[in-house]
Amino acid sequence: MTLNRVPQRNSLSEALMAGLADELSLIETDADVRAVVIAANGPVFSAGHDLKEMTVHRADADRGRAYYQRVMSQCSAMMQAIVRLPKPVIARVQGTATAAGCQLVASCDLAVAADTVSFATPGVNIGLFCSTPMVALSRNVGRKHAMEMLLTGEMIDALRAVEIGLINKAVPPEELDVAVTHFAETIVSKSALTVSIGKEAFYTQLEKGLSDAYVYASEVMVMNMLARDAEEGISSFIEKRDPKWEDR
Image (cartoon, rainbow, N blue to C red; front, top):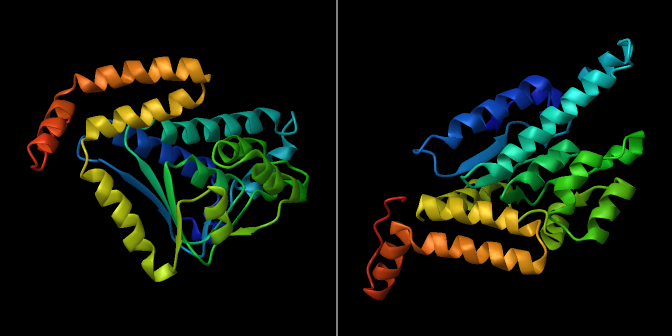
């Protein structure tokens, strides 16, 4: 999926978020899609929310309260749809990602960026703390690193983004597609059932205490062990042959 509001710096308008959400809904049940790449055209990956679209609603009778509530709920639902999608989602970051654009990168399962790009949660600079981007950011990087980005609003380069865990790799721009394709093709070669089980389990156990996480993960492991693909995968390993996945 490619963001294509280049003149608007791929800002997340209502229409763009609705389009992303609709595509994710279709992909969820499409067995032919085994991995998703979110990319963008132009020099900016995404500048976050469409502030011009939002500012218009200052003139509403409630100063925009109802509209802002709806937009923030829409954005939060779309970001969660990425996390809940049973297929892995890879961010292909060719340009700057700020505010909700940075949130979009952080919400993806994997992220590869050109080593020329930068990231920021700069809301504090305009009096609007990046509270919703903070949710995804703080689940990717350490607390001190997240607070540094949120409190200063300063840009970090791609190499720093790798260091703190916001993205997986930073590569020269001409190598971006190769790096993204490597991740996608590697994932696609696995059992789709196993990948979907693992993705759901990963995010679910993160929200639990240590003991509860182990109980939950053990239950998932047992369920996974009983799947046909686990039986096939283990047999192929023992027999030193390639597995034949059936995704069941």
